[in-house]
Length: 373
Image 1 (cartoon, rainbow, N blue to C red):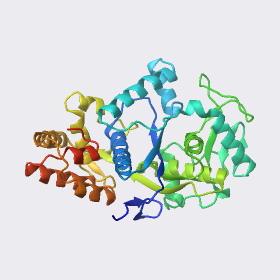
Image 2: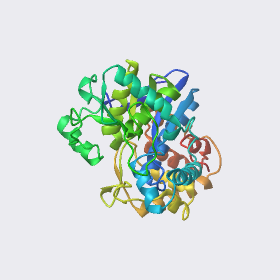
Image 3: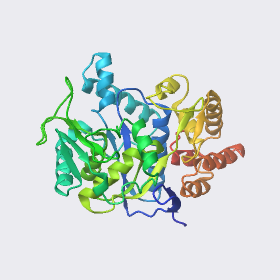
Image 4: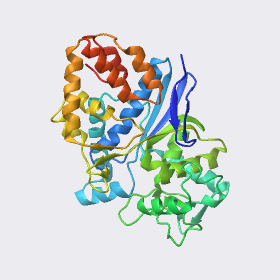
């Protein structure tokens, strides 16, 4: 049997993915201030299919999916709604979990919260300061990108584009306290009414990127098999997480980077910041969740695609046809081969369609891509 092939963002090529018996994986989770949209769901379904195939091959998978329960967005949303930020996070996390269960996404091996990792975060920052890859200004702690090894090499985007993307993500390249516009906050002083934790730099709260460094190192160790999320997180988030982690350990942080492409609505990226969204819970109220999963699975994870209502009609029809064929393991070998070819789920769907059209049941093949018939 040929080894699995997966595209690696860092190397810019489809390469062999041959991990050991236990596969360690980290996928960036949600900031729980709103419901799960299709951009989120596409990422988690992709990681779910990968885990299912790896388990089918005999591996144990340990997938960590963090919960960012304190940051600017969730604090702003909590103020607007007049609720405590942790109450908001609890409710939206429960709704997210319900959506994932309905889509038949495997539970995370670990789903740690940012607020539960503050001691770990402070420890990581301490180490980075000791190694002189960070600096303190008026209670704020910055990562020194010029002192880091190969900062920017993950995405190879160039300084100008990284600054533009940083501005879009509110990284504030013009912050006068920064030594370099690409430097980023690991610890920020808290504003009035915001949660704060004590530190030797003064009371404050974690920055965005430090959470994933601390949680990945704590949960999975210094080097992990596979890491990813949406491609929009490549910079600044994943570039910064990689730089911090390697500054702490001195080892390569991730062996393989896997990124999900964007989902668009009316030609614009689906994102909370633009409110250009289709929510999973709304689709679930009108369609079988397995049809929702099939609609997401009809597109290769590395190709951007545009949402339309016709996708749900097509997926609902496909689900009905698959179920009408009954149980069986038709096309299972072909499905496995397509999944090993850079997770080509659309090709796997087509061979199941062909088997079903011949009256052969393909419930085992459907289960391998997470669809319950």
